[in-house]
Image 1 (cartoon, helix red, strand yellow):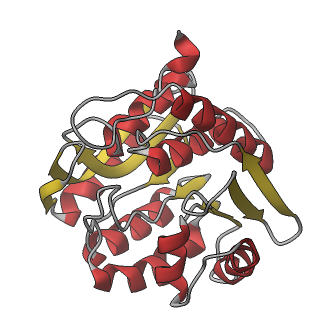
Image 2 (cartoon, helix red, strand yellow):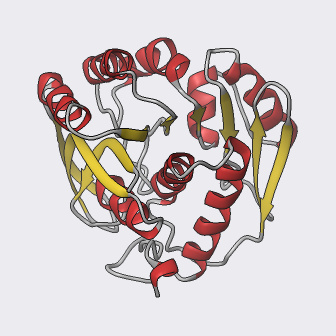
Image 3 (cartoon, one colour):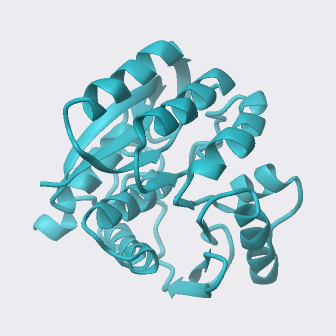
Length: 260
């Protein structure tokens, strides 16, 4: 049984964050473990409040897991503050965690901010160089680079620029564009456009968390990097197709569809 660790925030509405990650891990047949970075009070409509944990407690959770279980892959999601970003990066190095997927979570689906602005610098300088793959959406890519990323050509340029910051590979997600959902993969040798049909639904809460968690699970199971990304995208596309409504806002995707 492969062990995968998620370092992310808790979503009280159950659609994103730790809750989405653990369901995604279960759907892939790996054992999910977690280090919670922040507790959010949110639902399908909005993030009403959140509080970050002490960085010491975040690291303690990571150490508790890694000291007892052979972590095959890890992912990061909502890290909330610069102090947590720096502490998590140091722990990844000290614990020698392999195959790290960095989802640079900055803003919730509702538009509410989930990362302090001063933490963006820490993310660029401390976390990205440790990543096997980083998976920003277009607004996140814009924030990391400080420039617009709004066309497929700009996505390719962004992938090259982000990889220059240190990660082994980059997936720039194009879900905010019109037409088919096209993501750009770049690992320094291969530039691949990964396309899937766009599904007409508002129920896309937690798609970024789910995508990155699926990549981490597939890496843990031994998939080569590009195969892991392709498989994760196919898994997410079907999860969106089977998404459902709970509440008045953006419902969740169906993380457990492979088990049905």
